[in-house]
Length: 265
Image 1 (cartoon, one colour):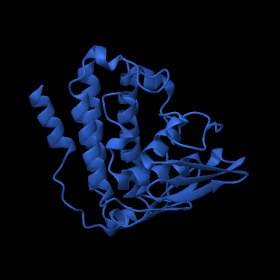
Image 2 (tube, helix red, strand yellow):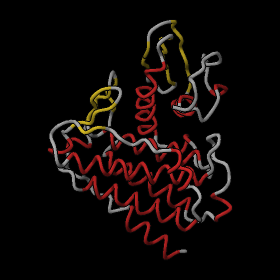
Image 3 (tube, helix red, strand yellow):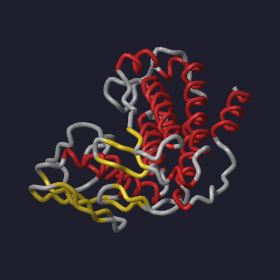
Image 4 (cartoon, helix red, strand yellow):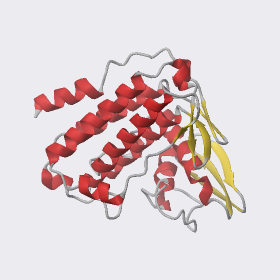
């Protein structure tokens, strides 16, 4: 087991050295949000991936079959989803090197593929998480400053290519919580928590057609999105992120008791 863990660390956790690319350390404009980088997006993703793999390496076949926080998904479904998403983002990263046109965002996993992947044993699940994560980080490694200036096309418009890193960081952290292995949103460093709060507010914007939601965090962040009846929600940024992503109810925040977000973001 220790030999496998060493291999995972060596593949998925390269040395923490700055890339030198200003694109990875400057604020990113996503819709109405200017999201500050916590330092270097790629290094944050590397650290988050290493944490997740360090927690999953000891899981047995039985452990993987246990329920996750997502209704109808076991931990094995989480692994299947994360591996598929890594492969999809890696393909988009490679496309950023081949064209200056916006790259279409394609990461939807068919249910049949998700369920089939979730039937594998612990070793196969861990190896897929390991290899897909390594392939994605390698794909990001191949991008230079000019590639990071390219864009991706989503259902919510054209976004900077750094959104690939932000989306993957969000997936790793949120689904790490879903695995119910002791990792919580309160374990995430504050700068990353705020970045993910903004990212998920952007992703949820199409849902806010009847309300104008104002978020006021205890840490001093304030923003309003949507149109309609004004609603103000307050709480810590970790609690707001947990609520917005559907991982916690509204008991840890104020003003959201009557709000229905329509399921996890």
